Image (cartoon, rainbow over all chains, first blue to last red; front, side, top):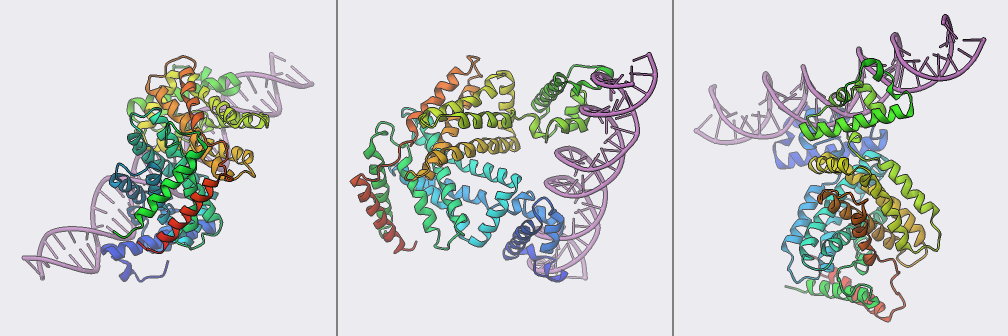
Length: 234
Length: 234
DNA sequence: CAGCCTAACGGCACTCCGTGCCACTAGCAA
DNA sequence: TTGCTAGTGGCACGGAGTGCCGTTAGGCTG
């Protein structure tokens, strides 16, 4: 983006900060060019040139052209996996999936302006929409695997795991999309998280009691109590 | 696939049956080559040559290389949309989504052997898996749109529409995958449909009872938990 | 039957994505 | 100074997907 002399930009990527700077420049250039000219009419050469690096270097930072505009889902997936891996077995399932889901919001709330630009471009270009769908499905699969383990042995465990995982991920995306459509208000993602938590009342996490009208309320009480416990000083 | 003299295959696509024949040959060639050599090591040239047509003709039948192995999701989407469009307003939501979902099974049960081959290849190749995820998400969006209309005005309507749609699609895929993993038994997809119908008990199709006194208590407890959490930055 | 017309076909050339290879150079160590 | 390492950019290549055009089969018309 900013003009740099060949001398200074020659080995920007040598240090860790240098690599981060090059990466930021590439992301910014891609977002700007996709927004201005459209995704299809922007080549990788254009992005690389705008960021002041060679085309070959672009592919050392991103696996593909689409990657330049996508959030770092791999890192977020790893963090979600960590939440599942470190969770205590007696934590209520509702609480666990809410915690796991909220982890991902940080991907977007960290830089609301960039998220908005990404959102606009992603939802206009079919190729990027499909790619986003595929990324989201990776979360769904991760949730499904962990819930399947949790529900193992219970009646209809696999089906409930599949349905619960899909429901949580769908609620997450709804909350996120509404937050973005509202202009990504910078409240640390609080509105986003609160909307997301509404899914708790809709999950079939308890096999026997589902259908009982009081059940949903009981679940939400449980989840809230769990949050109270967590927010206590250690 | 089958050798044809240049004379007979020259204008096979002139008639409707001819086009269907060419398409079948291309699909069969793609499935066989992907299976034998792997997806990455098969070029469009290979597929076209194996089917006895030119490379340019391949792209007149399929938009992309991936399309040659994918089921006809566009047609299935149109049929599902038709189910929603022609449904009576007083049909229970559960019944409607089950009917809509079952429509899609025909895509696979019509030719179990081909479906099995597609399943194997699709689940081995990351690019095809992602493409399948994107296709599935189109169904989810279609269900979401229609359910959002159905739940319009009801409390938490959007959230329940998103969750219900995701749940139905997830259950559909679980039933389908189990059917394929079992070797695609040719019972007209009965086992598949029955498994799918199990989702009915897990759907939040009835709105939460906001008049319930316990609901207010849950809300106040949640709000208290949020305030406490907010006052203690992590 | 002869001639025309339409439409599918095959081939060519082109753009662009993504990758392997290699020479270059800045920074560092001996 | 002399290697040594690691990031870089250029080059060339294979493959996907597209625009264009000449060719040709099959149908329609006189």
